[in-house]
Image 1: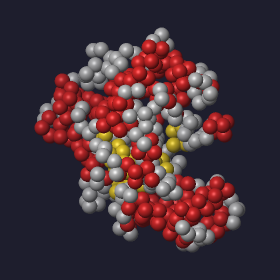
Image 2 (image 1 turned 180 degrees about the vertical axis):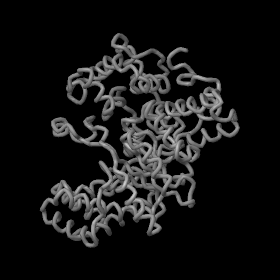
Image 3 (image 1 turned 90 degrees about the vertical axis):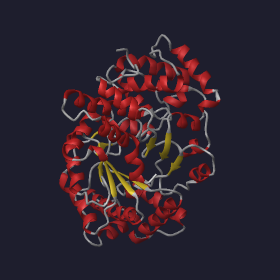
Image 4 (image 1 turned 30 degrees about the vertical axis):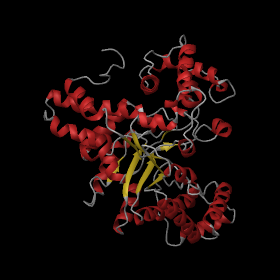
Length: 465
């Protein structure tokens, strides 16, 4: 079988039928990504393929560094064409890495280029892509429509004014864009000076004064309400691992006062403050009927030299060392006891914890909503073939695969939507192979609709799109 044929990754007749009949044409509900709301609202057209493809893509940056590419050709001042050429020099070294497959899927699906990108054909492919970018079909709106994207959920700080979302809401487009409330900076009390500066900005945006922990909660709730007014129905919460201890009564107020006065809290104090604030934010999420998404299991910015030079999200993060079960159970149980556990998606960054997360999700189902507590899709370093298979296996073993809300891009690139196709092919191959072997019933009438729901229907219902 030729590479990237119509039956790419589909190794049985059943797999091919599931994909082509049920998955291939399913729309996309992208419930977690990092696309720019302003670029979407402005319907931007990119100057060249390098700006569209390489700028901000730390997946590619990591690979280029590993291939010995100088930083000047990655994030430095080299020309866009030279950066594109450096990426092409890296591709042949990426055999079996998903970036190799994604790159060529993107060239085919968006640009109709079936050739493999190599150092030899860089000038021709660079010119061909840039020529197409000048055409009307290569605005952001047209690209999203081409991939059958119905909903884009961006990632937004509580201080964002959401003006881009407001502007897009009045435009005639075949998709909607929704904000997602991401209050991580309000929790980052360990970086005391930056945290205080952020609280000053939050107070200004909320039209209030933040002099106490209760003031902070009121300011965040005000912004939470504003986001809800503008179509937000989901919150993102990112943390390295679930905080091991919950605060004692009144402790968050004491730690807040200490840090607001400029004194850095001790490590244990910062952890308990974060746990207490997260609980309150989760209660806000429940009060407005939102979904909450937890992202954990990743060590961020571990290479200090690169972080100091380039900042966060530059390719110097790593899989973490696991999530203890008891702190996660305690967090969920504290909310559940009060009847304030919202629909929750748990994105796990360490494959060692797959079974723990799948099992924990099942423990806190309460019958109020199908698949109320979700094991999130294979995420970050795990959104590759083996990572997706391991996630599906863990969820199937102790949960309900049929209620899974499927893949999301978690991307900053408008060319990343073939990742959904990649996931769908892997899902269909796994299920089709089991049908072929007799490991599950040869019943496409039931398994086919399940595939379709995992691709789009479950997410649509879960988030209320």
